[in-house]
Image (tube, rainbow over all chains, first blue to last red):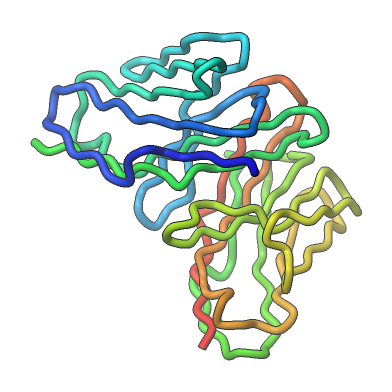
Length: 114
Length: 116
């Protein structure tokens, strides 16, 4: 069956360090993958999208990689700040008849300590 | 500014009652989605719609129904609420042009539902 795993439920890092979050999937051939941020009591907010033919995408301090051979995406936050503390969700779009539908991982709770 | 709103934000109901959660978006998006979020399960798709009068079942659709009579609204109805439906419910929308960044979903603030 199809499965998406975000390897850490929680990640604690010191301010200024790089946070690296992992999203692994099985039995998928995703057309693209997205990362969302969710703050407590709020809905997820889109951060980045990477397509199957792209290896890397950047946006300010954020970087996403996508390795379709390893079936893995890595999400990096460089120079992390306490304000980056949130839950981060990866989401896959399977393509084809799954038009518009996303399947979400369980999320990783990131805490950045001052 | 365009937005997506949900109401109520919090709801307490009793087992067996019918409950309707509202979702309204002003993005003029074709696609709308309902998810539930529970600890240990992440976001799971309940129902979705690609346009007016179109509805489709997601992975956890039992006990829920939706209808789409206009572009802006996709109400979610729990026909006979059960304690297992205690959850946080999120509505989302997307513009829905396949293969472009507009597949991004925009989420509402959520409705916290408690079924006693």
